[in-house]
Image (cartoon, rainbow, N blue to C red; front, side, top):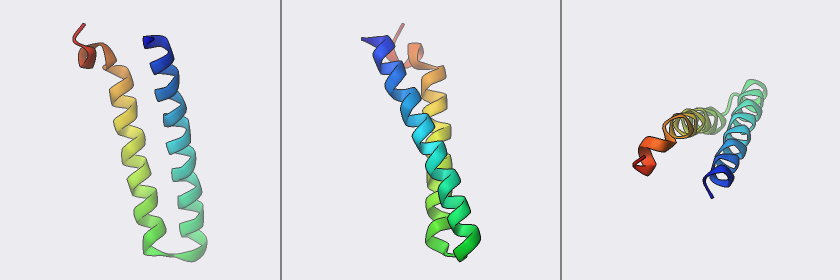
Amino acid sequence: MIPFHRLLISTAIVFCAGFAVWAASSYRSSHSGGMLALCLAFVVATAALIYYLRHLNRFLGR
């Protein structure tokens, strides 16, 4: 079950990073504050998921 969880978290990392890149490029063309906030939120989510994946054993109590 743990390897499948790692796969799901890795997929979420790729999605969040890709969405952050898309939001950044959209912000560059529109200069919308909402797009900047969305980009920053997904950058933070990507970093949090990377941290979680790297320290998964500690979160599981192993």
